[in-house]
Length: 398
Image 1 (spheres, helix red, strand yellow):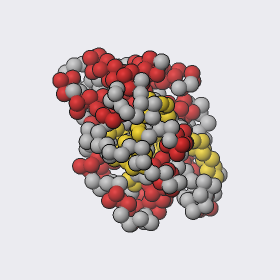
Image 2 (tube, helix red, strand yellow; image 1 turned 90 degrees about the vertical axis):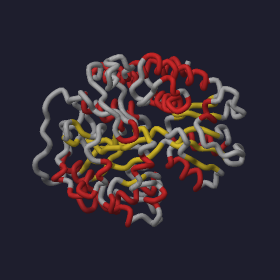
Image 3 (cartoon, helix red, strand yellow; image 1 turned 90 degrees about the horizontal axis):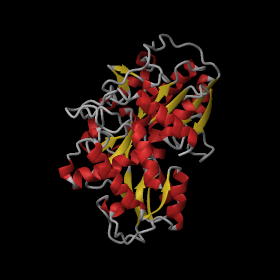
Image 4 (cartoon, one colour; image 1 turned 180 degrees about the vertical axis):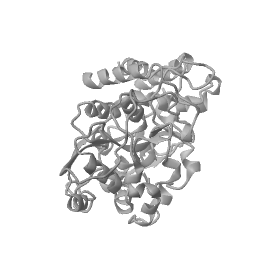
C-alpha cells in the first residue's frame, strides 16, 4: 500500500472510531449502525441537461468502450445518447478509490463495501434520488437498502452487481481439486512459494472466515467484527501463511500473469481473472469453498459536489439498464443487479451460473465492509477498527 493510501485509510478509520457495526445482514456483513455523514445532505431533486462529460473511478472491467475488446462496449452508446464523454480511472484497491475520490476530481465511483462506509462517513459522497434513476425499480430487492449502500433507509448509490472472492488453482499443477481454504493456509503446503493472496488489509477477513469454520471456540460470528483475541488469531494465521505465499496481488493483471507463467498455482481470485485466464487457455478452475467466502456488492456512488452531476445520474441509470448491466456482468464475471439483465446475457444460463437470484448462495458470502470499533453486540466497542487492520497488515507483510 502506498503512503497516500495508508494515510487515507488511517484518517478514515478515525472517523469510524465512534461508529457502530450493527447486527449481521446478508452474508454476515455488518450493518451501517451508527455510521452517519458528517452533515445532512440533500440528493439532487431534478435531472437537467448533461454537462458533456463524466469522470469515473471504477474497477477494471466495469467501464468498457471497446478498447480492450472491440466486442465489449457499453460506453459508446451511452456517449452518443447523452452527449456525456466518459473518462475513467481504474482503481486497483478500495483504499486507492477512497484516496482518489477525496481529490475532488471525480464525479463517481464503483465502490465496494469496504469503501462505501468510509466515503459516507467522510462526507465524500451524496445521497441518491432513485426517482431520477428509472432502472433502479428493477434492481433485485436483495441488493437494495443494504448496510453498505444506505443509511437510515436513504440510498447512497445504486447497486452494480455482486460476487464472491473465489479459490482458484492450476489444474495441471494441483491434481486434487480443493474444496477448502485450508489449501492456502496449510503451513506444510506442498505448494509453498506458489500460493497467492490478495494484498489488502481487508484480506484479514478471509482468515477470520476460515477460523470461524475451523476454530469455533474463537466465537467468530462476523469476520469484520473481531475482538482482540479473534483478531490476533486471524493475524497469526496470516503471518503463518506468509511463509508459503509466493507473492501477493492487488492489480488483477499481476495475478493473471503469475498464473499464466505458473509462478502461482493456487490462491484467492476474482471471477474476471479466471475468465481472462480461461480465454488464454490457461488450465484453471475455481470454487466457492465449504467455509464460504468474502465477496463484494459494488455500488455506484456520486461525489458530493460532483462537477457533472447530471451526466453521473445518467451514467448510474445506464450502467444498471438491462443491456448494459448484462454486458458488464458477463464480461466481469458477476451477478447483475438488474433482474431484467438476465434475459439480455449472451449466455442464457449466466444468471444461474452466477447465482443472481440465489440468496441462499449469497448467504455464504461475507460482503466486504469497513471494520469499526463497535462490535455490534454486547461486547461493546472492543473490536478492531480499520486503522488497526492496516497496521496489522503491514506487520503481516513484513
